[in-house]
Amino acid sequence: MPVKPSESEAEYFARLEVERRKQALAAQESGAAEEERQRLLAVARHHCPKCGAPLLTLHHRGVEIEQCSHCQGIWLDRGELEQVLTGEPVQGFFGSLKWLWESREGKQPCPRESR
Image (cartoon, rainbow, N blue to C red; front, side):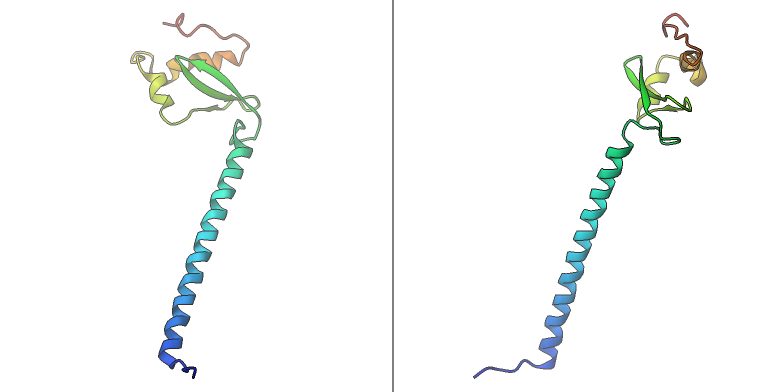
């Protein structure tokens, strides 16, 4: 003979089901957000964040610096600024990156000659 569940028992299992569905939905949303983030990174990689033009990679003291081919913006990854500025206390920030601005005019001097 089947036993009919009480109201409190049905309510308990209904709450469990609601919590399970909330957790499943949260997991699905976080997975979708990560997929969207990875898709955007793949599209934006090697493109200027400002204008979307391709980035050119320049090498300076073992650091890869990206420069926009259109707006000439300079983009550095985390920690690259510190690497570029290491050993340049006299010249300062703009002095150590001066060769990048000079490269716009078609001439790119050796970074060691500017010392």
